[in-house]
Image (cartoon, rainbow, N blue to C red; front, side, top):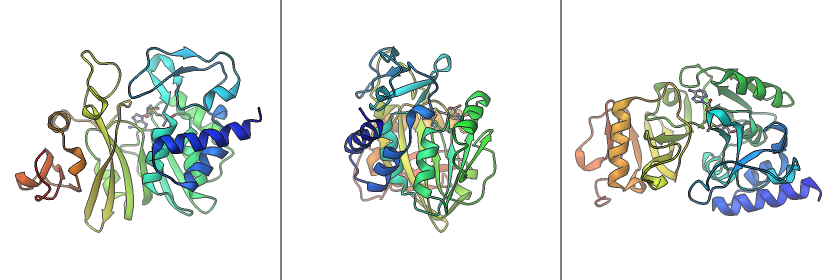
Length: 296
Ligand SMILES: C[S@@+](CC[C@H](N)C(=O)[O-])C[C@H]1O[C@@H](n2cnc3c(N)ncnc32)[C@H](O)[C@@H]1O
């Protein structure tokens, strides 16, 4: 079958699974060739239907049609590094609201598949600054993204590498707290898509813990000196180097255990917030809700 058609059907299907209609995101997924980013096939994939479906399985052949399913694909299997689940990224990118002309920052680009999707969304008048910590993956991303003049790939730690003011910061690894660099680097109205994970936020569990109690992706939006925040999705994701600290991790684990993440409406860069407005309190920052929004 013609791959362009397969890609268009895949884009429709993952948007439906993401549960948020967005024609621009769908078009970007329909255009970018996943096979250009995940190395030569056959590929090792893991099915995801609310939880990991066992170990890696190889695709039956190197036919790229196998990449157009809602599966994660290994990019560095020995380090448990995957090209993430398409429907999750479709959902997160739709919430990020990338526009033509935007400057977007991508932290944890891997081999660059989702960076390419972002490059389509910001268009020729926009640009994407992508950071990847792992030198082997960063080198692969640099090659894979060389056809995109609007992308710059930096091999380095995206929690500390400085960047120009960004309309969107898309973090693809699990932090325990927002870094000052990310919050300070958001333009007015800019959005930070931030996975916050506990130490049980990645890999297998014994006993199993529902994904929503292990990690969550929040959308943080800058409004002058204030930050709106809202929960988008549960998540299990590889840890973000340089954006994890034990006290914030403990506060996250406590907050996930009590539930109520959907009530979150704001992020405060101080821990001096009345108890009845706090969903999570960690040293130097809080996730807040309206005091009238009821119990957990
Ligand atoms: C879950 S993988 C996702 C890769 C890519 N987004 C994809 O889906 O194909 C997370 C990536 O974040 C990278 N990473 C972790 N901490 C990082 C940091 N502080 N700065 C940049 N990259 C980081 C890891 O090396 C890994 O490649």
